[in-house]
Image 1 (spheres, one colour):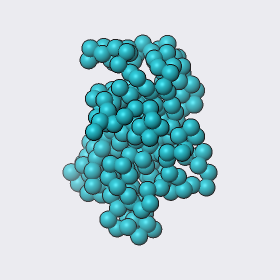
Image 2 (cartoon, rainbow, N blue to C red; image 1 turned 30 degrees about the horizontal axis):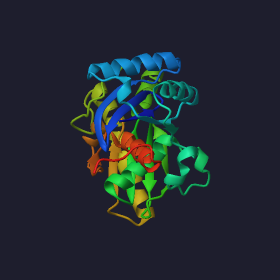
Image 3 (cartoon, rainbow, N blue to C red; image 1 turned 45 degrees about the vertical axis):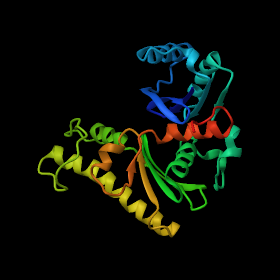
Image 4 (cartoon, one colour; image 1 turned 180 degrees about the vertical axis):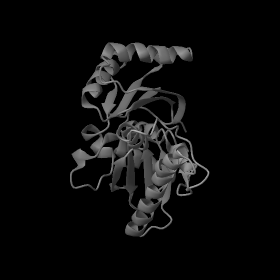
Length: 260
């Protein structure tokens, strides 16, 4: 089996692939203080939940945006198997980028682009709702060409609560109306419907620039379901898109075989 790791700024997603099927998945906090020992113990615990052991892992592939934690994950992975790889420069030969500075492109964005083309075809637009709201664009030839980065929904809410003295913490629920009748509804409208409207506007502009009005739009990330409930901009919500991209890159690198 292949263990795919998607390390974001806030959360880390782990997926265990049996061939091309995602058999098991877990989420954990991205804690910059974690050591390789701590990661090893946590992984043992997650596997134990399903009666599995480290022996079932033949290869490890990860995409990370936190350099110091990537090094700890690399050490933890090497305790399990010698077959490890990080998405980025080492995998450039199997990914397609049209970017002025390819080394600046986040590993998660590369994985999203690969998964979008593989699973849904090109051109495609991925909206990843994480710490930041990333929009990743794949052109008709299957190349990642860029996109947009905006503050994430949760970051925006946290900043509002911290700076506005009379606004307490507000639950992230989709309001029934754009016109909020209470402070809670007004904040929810601005935050959630506002995020949905921003995405709708950017997607429309990107489709025009691509000259691809039918380009698929895929939502992923922790808050994808919430925002998708407030918008009809998305063709599909795929919470495991980044993990699928990491696994596909590992397959292209010859680290494991997909099931027929």
